[in-house]
Structure formats: C-alpha cells, structure tokens
Image 1 (cartoon, rainbow, N blue to C red):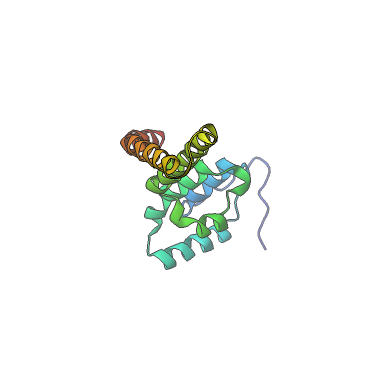
Image 2 (tube, rainbow, N blue to C red):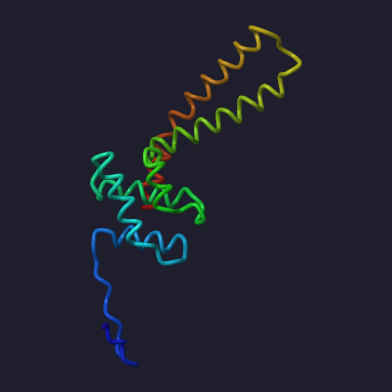
Length: 149
C-alpha cells in the first residue's frame, strides 16, 4: 500500500516522457489535467494509421490546439481530424472560406443586374483574381504561423 506524503515533504517530480509535451499543452489549453492514458491511446492510433512518429505529430497537435476552442480540444477529435492540422490545410480552408464569403457578397450585390452567362463570367473572373491574390499571401501567413511557435 502506498504511503501518503508527510506534511512538509516536497511532492515527487513528475516523470518526463514522450507524452509530456502533449499533455502539458492540452492542460494549458483546457485548464484541466488530461487523461494521459487516453491521450497516449489516441496518439498511438494516429501513429499506427499514418506512420507519423510522435515528433511529426507534435506540430500538428499545436496547430490543432491553437485552432479549436478549449471545449473541443480532445485527443479523440484530434485523431479523427488529423489530416486537417497542417499549415497548408489550414490556409486552404481559410482561402476557401474567404472566397466563398466574397463570392456570396458579390452575387448578392450583382443579383439584379447581370443574367445568365454574363453573371457567370464575371463571378469566375472575380474568383480567379481572388485566388491569385490569396496565393501570393501564403508565404506571409506561413511566416506568421512559424513566428508564433
């Protein structure tokens, strides 16, 4: 039977393992100590499915934690959405969301003026211009993401 710590006795230091950075970052995000066994199980599942070792998973883990609200920060959600947590994938989602929003705004503004092929041609031209503009912004966005780490 384990003996309780005596008053005034310093607690034993926690042992550092490969899962420690994952657990500490999750605890910082959620404010609660994580279930380390569950975290290890989910990370091992990702490793087995993708072949990515834990060092390759950690940057994606940090992007995941930075991108989701604390209530959604769970190892299971990370495992099921693992493919989404790369800088390129996040940028594509941001560009897609922005292009969709811009296209809807333009359609709403031009709804009554243009009809048929003219409307489609203008929308496609605006979409191409936006895609070219956003593709030039990729390196700047990646540089900013790297500075935060």
